[in-house]
Image 1 (cartoon, rainbow, N blue to C red):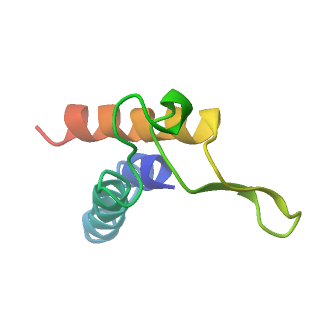
Image 2 (cartoon, rainbow, N blue to C red):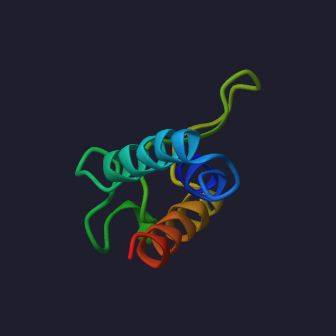
Length: 84
C-alpha cells in the first residue's frame, strides 16, 4: 500500500498528491519501525514481520511474505528517488 500511495501521488493534482504522499510516507515509517521490521538475521531472513496475505481467506496471517518484502523495498526506493 505504501508503494502504491507514493506512486499515486505522481498522477493527481497537487493537493491530492500531498495527501497520498503523506499517507504513503506514514505507512512506510510504520513499516520501518521495530514493530514491523525484523532485526537482521531474524524472522527467517525476511525483512517484514506480521504480514497478511488474505484475512477473508484465512490464509497467510501474521507471517513473513516475500511479496511484502518486495513492495516494502519498492516503496523505500520510490521514497528515496522522489523525495529529493
